[in-house]
Length: 122
Length: 139
Length: 320
Image (tube, rainbow over all chains, first blue to last red; front, top):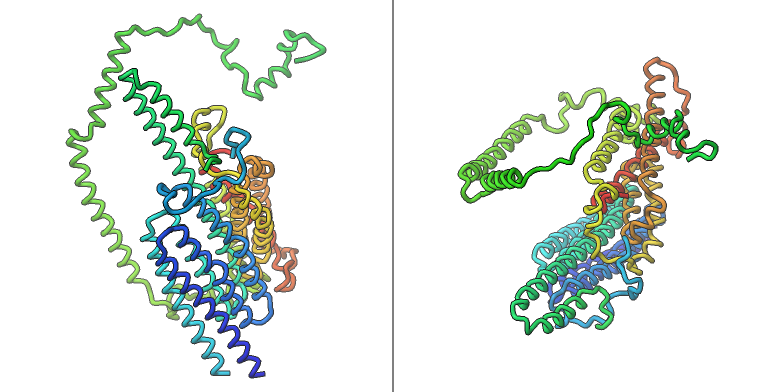
């Protein structure tokens, strides 16, 4: 059916263009913010929502087959791993920043108290 | 259908060109960014955009196996961020401890000349060494 | 130690001497060489001082870079010559490239009957839908055998150069630079627990589907190696050594390479003597098809995964 094809194309194109718009906003954010942590927050937006919309649009355009399943798995993997990347980069930034007290407030850097007293063997 | 095919083609080409321009801007950020975290973030962003480009090529060329490459890219960029942050933190903390030790030993050498300020230097040494501990529970 | 026989008699038996020889604790010069009783080696102060003075003077003369005229001249000459040499190499390579024939012309030596035969009869003779895998693991499997062995030799070289033995070199082993790294990050550990099994499964999928689509042993092994490195970074060396140690790597690599060699020897033997190899080619497109390519993919994947993990561990810790 022709109409169905066109509807599918328009829906997929809408999602894809929304994803590209999010990427553009992310780039604007990365270049305009003053502090590193803000820039990192803007970059995380593209990792999760930007790529989610883009790949969702491509899945819609492709129909339901194994390739779409693989693209969906890419989304799932990225949504698991992107917050961890942000967390690690933020930890790096907070540890290595000299004048950190002027820019932000750190409540508790480590997650668990080191009661064992020594540095565990890694 | 002709117009549908050409519409698909125009859309994909346009998006690919825009993404390519964005990747170049990411590279600019990686070069400029004054801190290390900036560069790691830029590398991660470039990886994400490349994943989108490869996914678009998957649909455009109709080949299903290119989606495996997207998954591999996601894994590798994630792994890169983990290893890089770990190594940089280790290097920075080690350098900081070495600098503090050198400063402490220099303080000690300077103040052992006059015996009156030895208590004061012992006090300052204690404060310096307690600041070196990693667990900053007092903050 | 022996319970039936006292220690002195036990030390004279053959089995004790054999055991000592096997372990390497036997002193080879005992009872075989006549030696005079030795004195301690003593040097008087004067010779020691003279030797140290000479050594210091020589070191200063060689390493005193400010006043060493030879080194200054050499530096300037070296810079000029290195630039000229690089330019010369680049020019030579560009000239060679410009003599190459254009891509796609029909009467060039590249487009000969070999590639035609691979493309036309590849699916039929090897049974692999992916012609590239069929080529590297069936037509040209000998090259791949060499490549796997090169991987193994490279790992052995890295092990020889970078391995730190805790018993022989305790200072260098203890002065590790990982004291200040962050350890036991709870977020990372939780996510790694969830993500590492799918990464392994994905790597195994790439290896097994090598003859049906792009992939094969090398890329699948790289993905499995990446999964192991992720686990190591999240949990630390102690927990990873519970299931992957040097012994594991040695045994799996050796078994994989031996299996590869045996399979390929069978193919060589049947091919060279014009006997029909009884391995069925199967239906193209099914997993159990294309003869021995599946087994060879698995062997190559195991070797590559172990190699990637070994390189990472050697560069980070030096021993595992």
